[in-house]
Image (tube, rainbow, N blue to C red; front, side, top):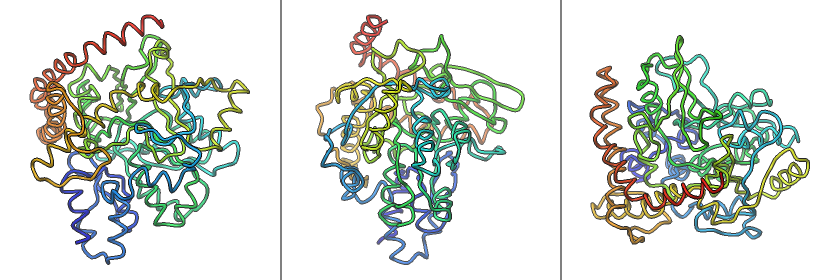
Length: 462
């Protein structure tokens, strides 16, 4: 019966590939044909009941009695924090960027994702940072990025910028268990949730993970999404060596997703919105599990860092971060650094934090309630979430959009895998073009008023 729980997660498409189960089971994760991490179910076949219970407990898609609210109460000083239905518990909310060094230019947005790790290192509060870096000596079948440990600021800087790429934690957790210390871990919400559950099971990991940073997340992309962007610009999957998802420049808006793809002898740059399946929120080549997530900002983390997509910040192409603070030590570090003019921060309201990631919250609130209702109508098992099915009054056009996005995820996954087998990018392009174009027309129709309002606000601030 215990094994059936994890079976349902993996076979139902609800595995985020975090690797927590592989770590507690002392096995490993694999990359499937769709460019997603998942455990080998056969490796769980002979586990004793105690280990299987641990496997099930750490899985982010199981055990709703240990949801984000409960985990936050276990790891954060919630009695001193304010509670929000959208961003979880919080002590303070800021918009800002790093003034010192090259953190802002070298980062995806305002530079805080790298700066906070460097600051904790300088203050000797941690021994290292667990974060995502380029996979060294990459071969054709290897991932572009993996979790690694940086113990110096130079090493840390090598992992700057956001990566929209599947990753797993089991390998780096094994390293930590063999090398206990004080670490900062940076990850998307489901990874932080998995780590929190591992901390409740493993005393070495619990003591070693001193701080956590959550990155605001729209959803996780498979490795195949990266291949699809590079392939669209002429770099075949077997030739792609390195990838940058957000390229900065004076003429590139803060909201733009301009990627740079590399092979051994070429470099190409393009706005991902101009590539089939490249517009991020349409859901091409994303993990299906992300369709059933209700945590946009990583509510169990000590600090959340994301893009402050608000009109008053969007005129600055260098980027501005949204910061949600849940840890008093980190709050003090920020305030001291602000007084020293090493960083720039301004207070934001809870509403502004929500507005800064409004699309993600629509998808993970009303969109999620719609998808849960659909699964229940089909009598299919799905994870229990904090959002109730059919709990939003959704207009018909939005229902069509949510249904189409769900289908885009499913179809793009199968079609791109077939294109890889055929070694023919045009197969993917032709099969997905009409669906994605139709979806875009519907999205614009649904959002026209909101887009115009934001455009006016942007021009006024500019």
